[in-house]
Length: 316
Image (cartoon, rainbow, N blue to C red; front, top):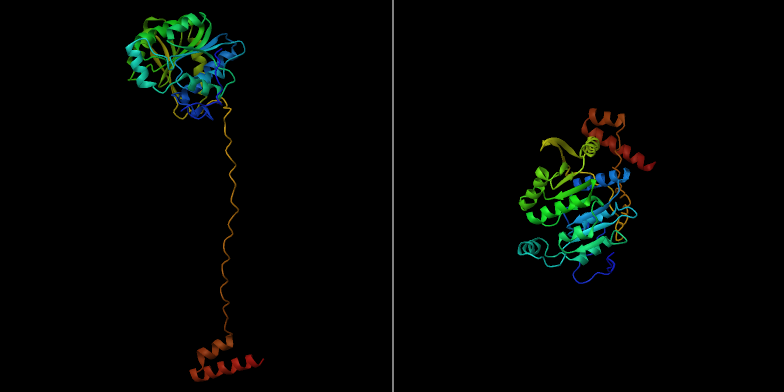
């Protein structure tokens, strides 16, 4: 286990401690969170044994999520270069372009905002993983490291060795235009390397080197009950491939942050009492006798009658 200062000890220009998973930088979209949750929960319900593995951690968003499914006695291994130098020019250039702000301390600080202990951290090239992780020991692996064909191809080959026969691998950027090397390596594994796709989203392909039939059928049953997810089945490379979309997917339970901030209750303002409407002056109604005098008698007679009536009312 790697020791590190806790997340409550910020240093330098580090970002504030995240109060929720949404505040952790990264590209871990809702539909993939739903699928990670489904695959990992299914493995727990079936008591399938195995550890967890992630190659390529960035700021730790997906690692934090995966760490919530770690069971007693299991190991979670995370491998990333972080701020270590790469050994070849192409990989060094990629690190400078895509991950210039990435540091191991930022990852560990984020992770410790959600979990009590760090995973086993391998800082260096992903080729180190095969010597640090036991063969056939993992049940779920997330590969999101280098975008270069040679490195991705090696990561996939190593992952095949490290996974249980029932294990699931999630491969990121299998179709992104900015990293064609990943697509080449992933589809090569499907075409000639025995990888059986289960499903794809806009960013990740999920597959297994075991029998994909049972997990695929159970996934289709799950998707049939989700109104927030769209899915379809395609025939690919002699097998079935489930396509899943869900920009508005309802997120599964999120790992709680120790820095979660409760929103202060909103006090309702007392109702504003409308100003009283001034009462209209009372309209004095004319008596029938007065109306008759005014309408029938000549004006000089009616005016005299009115003055006489007023004088009598005043004396009364």
